[in-house]
Image (cartoon, rainbow, N blue to C red; front, top):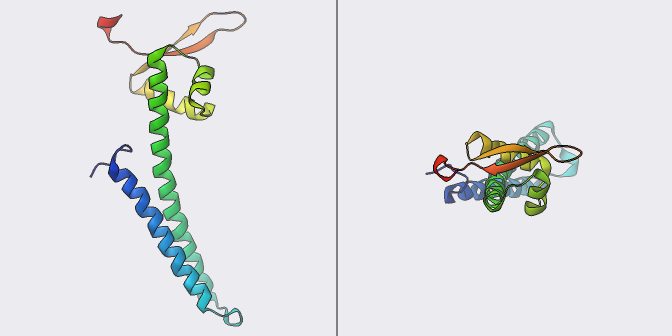
Amino acid sequence: MSIRPDSPWHYAGAFYALVKAQTKLHILIRFVGKTELFIESESDNEVINSQLNEIEQHLKSARQNLMATKMIDLTQKIEAQLALKDCNTGELKDATGATYPEIFTALKQLLDAGKAQYYFIYTMPLPTLTYQLKKPFWKI
């Protein structure tokens, strides 16, 4: 099984987490429906809280899986945009529709992987930070 975010197993893991959360929620609904309002006990509250905590953990796991997938998609979009032309972050924001923190995170991943590099274009009034894909030395 691959744990890469673009593998089918990654999506299966997210689906499994959502199914587990749904199952826990159904159990909780049945449990709450069987208890009467007049007979509330501390143990009932503990059971309900533990079930809610488990549901929250399953949903958090599914959310993390989906965010990793979204970040891979954004990184690929940015890489495709940089393949077309050198871009600054404003142009990447317009092209991808992502927020600046997401764009900078994806750019950091590309820079760390050695796929991209940056340079400054000196224009008036301020220099502009511009990103480009790294070209192999034989294509320079």
